[in-house]
Length: 257
Image (cartoon, rainbow, N blue to C red):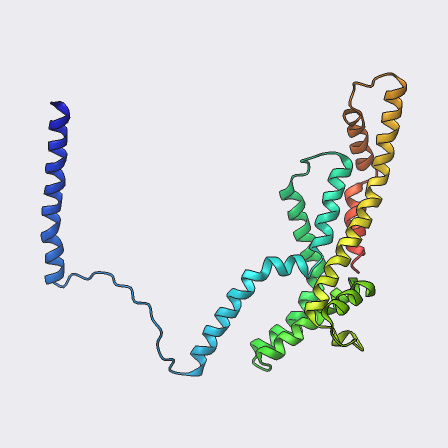
């Protein structure tokens, strides 16, 4: 009986609220109460400048959507991130430093390394375009030149030849004849190879420590004790004593100069 009474009370409240709201809506329609409205459509542009602004906004949104890929494929970020990952595995600290720290360090080092390139882009492309001394096509060509020069400096001829053959284009006479779509993947695999070479060199001293610790434990008959537990403090100590971060970051930055 209690449940029926509760249900009856709730039904009366809903009906009363509906009846009370209906006159208010009718009054709003009849008395000119402003109600919000949303219209979406295409209109005729009054001048070419309005169309140009819309195209620029669309182009800007497209560039922003591709910004992560551009940052990874056409800058020093790939080499830095891979080397730092190799370093963490070589030391044996699985989650230290965390991924956020390594990615953040790679990003800021990328900004540091690429600053001269971006300053050249700003001087030769962005500033003239904002002053309306060059058009969009000329600005894009001027902006691509310093970025391409950076990638050519870090790309091996063997990798360039590979993608030129895969693309089946006419043998280029100079670097200007190589399309950017051929240069980018060649630059990527060159960066991967360089990063793996640096990672191999980083592994060697820590591998020696692991082998020494394993031999000592085996000679002492401590076969049940994991060598990693003993070697990890020594590897961290070695890395701190030689000022490893200073050496590695300095070497990585100089490798792009």
